[in-house]
Image 1 (tube, chains in turn red, cyan):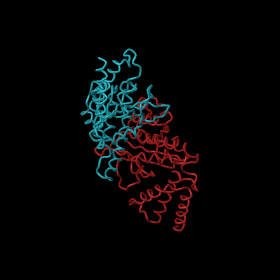
Image 2 (cartoon, each protein chain N blue to C red):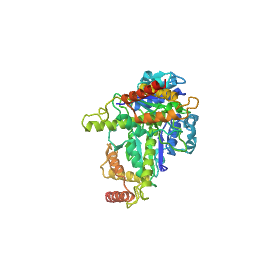
Image 3 (cartoon, one colour):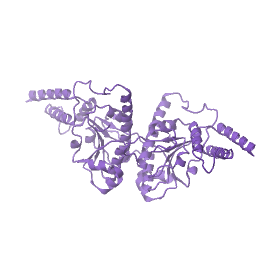
Image 4 (cartoon, rainbow over the protein chains, first blue to last red):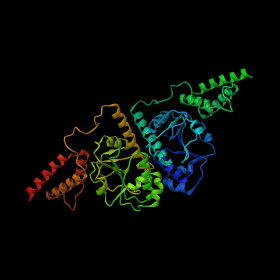
Length: 248
Length: 248
């Protein structure tokens, strides 16, 4: 249950927040913690705040870049407090959890949490299939990092328990998956796909690298929203290759 | 929205937890914080952890006893991690929130959070109409105090938003209340009612004060679960008085 989910904390400043997040995760049965370039880690304050979730901290993996932390993932969700210039599909914590527990068992899911002061960067948010917003008081919306992790993991647990009940009372067939005719593309597939796309669009002079505007962003949003499978990605990359060949 | 709800923290040891709870509350638009005999308060750590929720801390009311903190309340909910000897009606955080937002506007609601190490005492839990349990990992169920407040207030906000949407799309009549023929009894009514009941049962020798067993507890659970109104309480107290008069 929830073992395919990883919580990714990016550039966290305060080690205490890492510990409190670990405790929140363990309480809710979410075990995989990834840290991307934490400011101070390992640190005694993290272990102190983690209380009996220290085993989870000890197993936490530290990465230098977000790309490494989400390698092989099929669904990436970025937490975001603000509205962005280019609106991305947004789900709340409950809808996110329902989506996550409907993923097939072999799909890896990453939920990203940004810096205490600035959240996720636009580049990080544009890696995501959708954004997660927790509804807060308009007059005071800056949720503490561990509190946001707590709410997200609480909803994951609620959704997992509901699914477990539903599965137990129904036939043993999977709730989702199995009927699609190809595997979902993972982040590596998509990263190569987008690189190939951008390269092709530059060669086509659709994108001016000196003034790329929001074109790639909009295209990424389109494709990420559709959760493409491996066959679709390869098909489109075949198109890009064909275009590139012609331009030579 | 949610202004009839008070969060009551009982005998909190760490002032940082009070601050973190205040922040969690303000993020979710729950404003009324009551502190019952906090160990260290006021304290700079509370203000430090509250961040911009310091206004909420400044308005927090400190009481010496729980009875004072819940005076005039109509619905009292106690958070509880463990199963108790006498099982009480239990709702999860979502069900609790749905119940709370269905209360009439003039009903005061108190949600009680116990000590960091031991939670609420049996006596405190027996003041409650029902208990709130947040589903946690069986292997690690000790939710941090502020994390429990966060989850409860998050569900309150979700339920309040859902009710607001439902109310806006429906006719302007209240969702609950207005159709009952008497006001609900508040805690003062119920306290006097139970004192009167116990006194009567002792006089009747149904209860042996030297060995009261769980009789009053079971009776309290019965009446609290039914959410009696003022007329019903007075009617029963009339019965007790009649019994007492006969015994003299």
